[in-house]
Picture 1 (tube, rainbow, N blue to C red):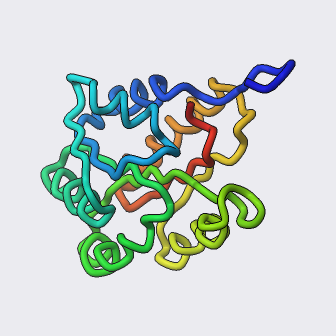
Picture 2 (tube, one colour; picture 1 turned 90 degrees about the vertical axis):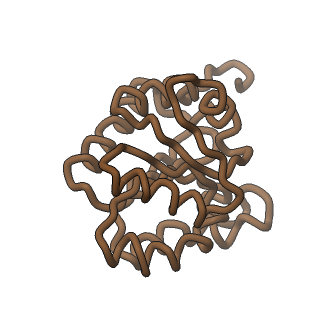
Picture 3 (cartoon, rainbow, N blue to C red; picture 1 turned 120 degrees about the vertical axis):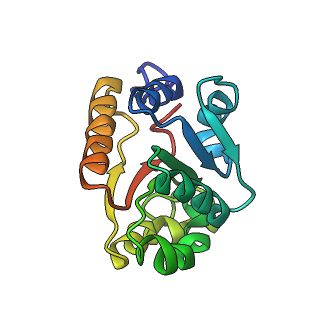
Amino acid sequence: SRAGTRRLSIEAKSIVQILKSYSFNNITGVPDSTFGNLFNLLENDNDINYIRANREDTALGISSGFSISKKNSCVIMQNSGVGNIINPLTSFNLMYKIPTLLIVGWRGYGGEPNDAPEHWIMGEKTKDFFKMLNISIATFENVDDAPKKISDEFSNEIDDYLLKKSMKAIIINKGVIT
């Protein structure tokens, strides 16, 4: 926490509870430090079938298989892997209208000078990749939002995804989930 102030991000366990409440019991992803606590909880939760993938396109393929089977599934990944999912998105998910929820950690938020230099370009362009493909996005940018606000908005975005049953990317700034 910051000196003299209370950090108002949401705890990873609250995100896990929300996902479970919507029957997202099949989750895949490529672990990274943006969502470190979240990945640790997923790996150790007996109610969740968490499949660790070595690449984001593999994670998308696994999640798409669950989607075809009418089971809620999502991919949790860092934005540095967005480039790895462009081809499967365009030649499979979008072409055949196979919905998958993408929860994307936003390293390099806003570009330079945020985060490490290797995250600046993707940090600036993350939203553009999804917009270019007409994939619905929601962003969680403010690390100082109250946990209840984040929880309510995250739940609303899942409601929207389940209602529309089309690709959606929820892009979350580093530090929003602790």
